[in-house]
Length: 378
Image 1 (tube, rainbow, N blue to C red):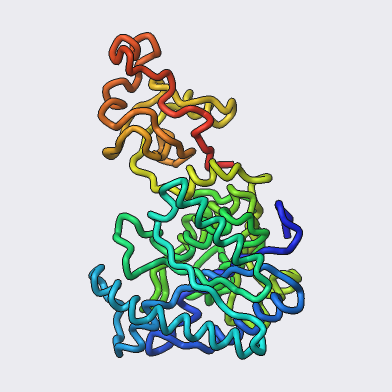
Image 2: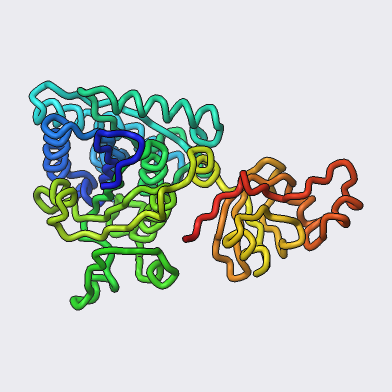
C-alpha cells in the first residue's frame, strides 16, 4: 500500500448493497464475514479502518416487508430512517462479538452539504481523524438518506467512499461488491469475459464496458465504481474492486493473493484544498473550452481565461464550483469560477482588453485562477 502522511496503515472499506441484499432485501451473512476480518485487522495488525456501508434502505425494506425499492424521495427517506438504526445495530453487535468486547463502532451520517462549506469539510475531516486514532473504534459511515435532498446527495456510496478516502489520506480504498472486479465484458452475459487485474488509467473505452446495478436494493453499478476509482486516484489513493463474497477477501487483497482489479493512483495526489474543490463541492455548471485553452491548462498549468471559453452550461453564481470540459464534452478539470454564468456568456471568447471594456471595474483577468483549478485527467 501507498503510505501517506501517517505510519499506521489506513484503509476505507466500502461494503456494497449487493453484499447485504438477499431475497428479502437484506442478508447479514457476508456482513458477518467482513466484520470478522476487519476486527482482526484492527486488533491484531493495528490497521486504521473506516467502513462506508450501504444497506440502510435494504434494512428498512426488510423491516417493512417491502420487495421493491421505493422510488419517491420521501418514501426512500422514510425507509432509510427505519433501516439505519437496524443497520448500525447489526454492525455494533457483530463488532462486539468478534472483537470480544474490545472494539466498538461509531456512526457518521453525511450529506453533500457537509462537504460544500470549507469549514464544515474540515470539521468532518478532524472528526474522522480523531475516530481513526481511537484504538477501540471502527467508524461506520453512510449517506444520511433520511434528510438528503436530491440536490445534496452523493448519488451512491461508491462516490462517498472515494471522497472520504481522499479526505483522510487513506492508503487504500477497497470497494467490495459481488464480482471479482472489472471485466472486459459483462461476465453475467459472456462466459469468456476476462478480469482486468490492473488499470493504469481510466479511459473512455474502459468506462464503456461498465454496466448498471444488479439487485433490487442497489443504486450503483460498475460505472460508479470507476468514478470512485478516478476520484481516489486523483488524490493519490490506491483503489481496489474485489468480491466480498470470497472468504478472507480483505486479507487476500492486502496480501495480493486474491483476484481483483487494482487501480493505480495518479502520482502523489493533490493538496487538501484542491481535493475540496474537486470532490468536496458539487459542480454547479460546465464551461466548455477550445483546444488551445485545454492544452494551456493540461500542459502548462495555466489559468482559464475568457478567450478560451466556447460555451457555458447551467446557471451558477460567482464563487461556484464548475466543471471544465473540452470540445468533445470530456471533463478535464474543476474549479471555482470568478464570474456567474450570465456574465461568462457575455464575455466568453473575449480577450482581456475587451473584457475590461465590457465590465470595467468588475473585470478579473481569469475566469478560474490556476490556484483554484484542479486537473482531473492524467
